[in-house]
Image (cartoon, rainbow, N blue to C red; front, side, top):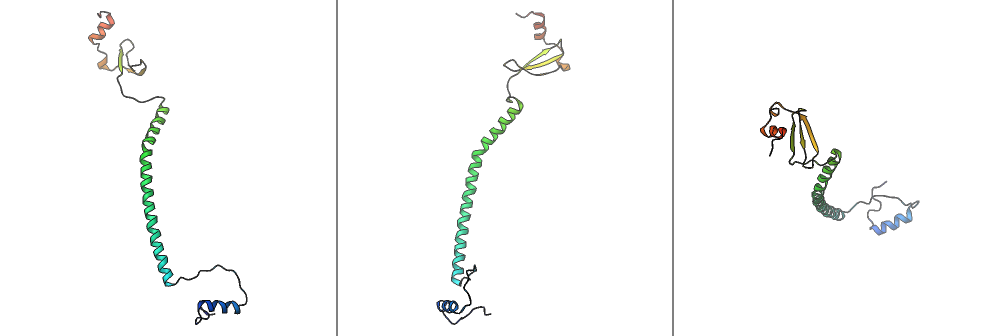
Length: 142
């Protein structure tokens, strides 16, 4: 069988002769080959579409970066709230009041609200009483 039948006829004449002389006509899917002009047009279309897609991808990256920047502080606050919930309270730094109990040999730290937050054994340097502790203990304060 020939690669191209009736090559000496125009496309329209070829179609008529093929239709009239074939054994049967069937619907089929096939690939129609492009002419050189059609190939060039498709290449231009490919280049244009590639440029459009690249521009849209750049815009998408910028939008993602903007959203990540908006989401970051919320995400960090969410992590803080979760850790506070797990800890059962908020971790803060502030003034605490140290009390030494010589009788029990303990040191306690209290919040300004009066809650005991830490208790430990006295260290050797804390076992020596200060003048304030002696006066407080003897009741000779003014």
